[in-house]
Length: 97
Image (tube, rainbow, N blue to C red; front, top):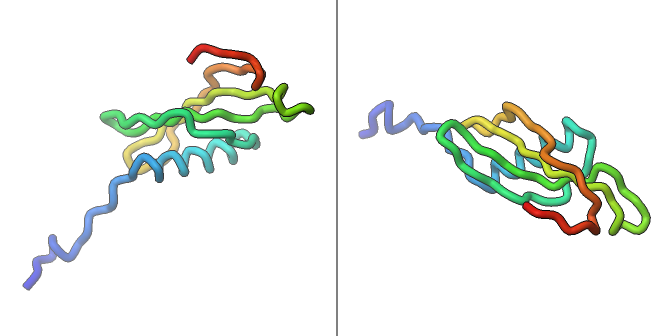
């Protein structure tokens, strides 16, 4: 015999891959830019922070593309709460992280 608390399932907690996927989708929609890669995912006490590399301007050759690093904050339910651009740089230029 099961109790009502057993039959009610708790919502699944987001995982790092699901949070990163959500951040990629949301940032692409918000900025209109292509997301190049996920460069970091961190779990915090009250949510998540995802760092993404974004193609802001495509050039020929592509080694001269203009890229940006963005930070996306999400709450415990993987809803975007904020985003900001950290820096812009040319793809071919060495940079410090």
